[in-house]
Image (cartoon, rainbow, N blue to C red; front, side, top):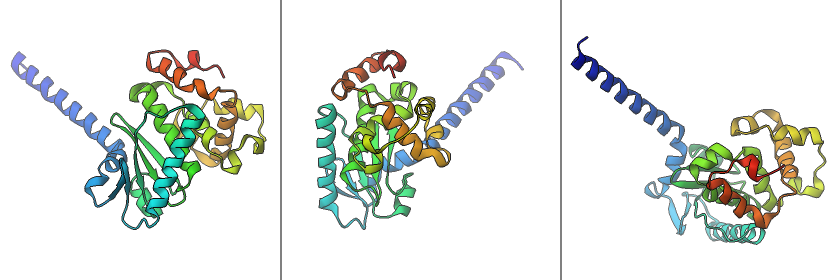
Length: 235
């Protein structure tokens, strides 16, 4: 193979590799991309960044719930700066088409956070919970969120504004061993796997209980500026 042919071969190989990586990325982010594009598929815009799928009947009520959720986050941690897109769906099947469960799911992308509120998640507890995820992502940035924020911490902090009875600190009885174990679960695949997901949630809630809420944003800013999670948060 002469130099020119070798150069062309390497160029084509590199191009195919780039295309393959791009297609794989698009596939892995397909639900987030679909969520971002709902405005083009017949979803009604109810308020800035809030969309409802066809069939959602309690539109005004859910918009009010979302506003109450934002207020709860602001009261607990401070004023929000995140402006996630929020999509309200009426059925479990519609939620699944957007990569969500019947309660709620937050998709994180370099463009921002897209929250799906399913038929079982249209209440202030779930709305506030998902809004905290959006705020954490906004405060640290997409790349640092992916590299530094453990899922157990993200869920534990979100549960601080989630007042559903199983997650209230006074209702939780769990061993120190379980709390220590949940701190090893860095990824969503580990945290949400198997039959122990509920235990992981309650352990995560207890694990962050000593966090000072009004210092959270300042601590997340330190991570955004390059500090490691372990250096900022001592749990």
